[in-house]
Length: 358
Image (tube, rainbow, N blue to C red; front, top):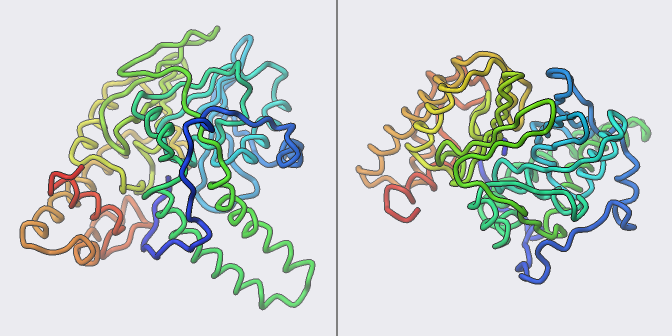
């Protein structure tokens, strides 16, 4: 999940109903009347070739650092990692994949439970195996992929952005030009509106530590290297291609930290250094090859943890600490991070851990 600089209350339209156990796993089809238009949108994603048969899918419609699924085309099937934030977007992804290959999608992998990596699960046919960590299964089954802190966070990030973009387009005199500029805004609104309509679809197979899939001609290793972005992060390692798919455990920017585990996250990142890779596909950004980015993120987390711990010991509240923490020295490696202050969802989470309420 992408990061942001500040938080605001979530608007009432994102209040979510409780998910019933009976509804879980009842997958919708892309042929459903509400999804047929999305299923006919193969141009909604651009597929960037990383290695032969391995693609990073980039949305051509939704602005900002939205999830970038990974598509792995094997000799006889397709594996999809993190099938986007909604049923409609997943149908568009499936339509796009059909232009790459006629081979069937047989496996979906969720790197963690957040909605933007799992809410697309529900439109894959029942014979498609969905794999994730056991914790991810538990969280999706409980409704946590469509409710709770991460949904509050994304609403408080996107709603102000939508309002600002709409105000900007109001000043455009040409109606056709105004409508064109508003299309990305409309897509963001649709993404938010889709969250409470999602039927959470848990994995059909779970991983505790490691699972190796053999899909000729390649091995696909699923690894849980420890708690970090969530308690159930998986990374996907393609040893022959030397590709590491990290979800939100490792990004080239500051990830969302509201469900994180400090300082275990730092130790989990250490485990990645033992893998023999030369390209990283993060959950929300372009691929990168600089292994030093692991060190940069660890350094950021250490500084954040140290400063937060000192303020917590001094009796400062999580909200006040979010304004007082100074991480300006990290802007060289993370230019979008504020020089003063930190996401209040991060300090809320750190205070929970320090207070023993994790």
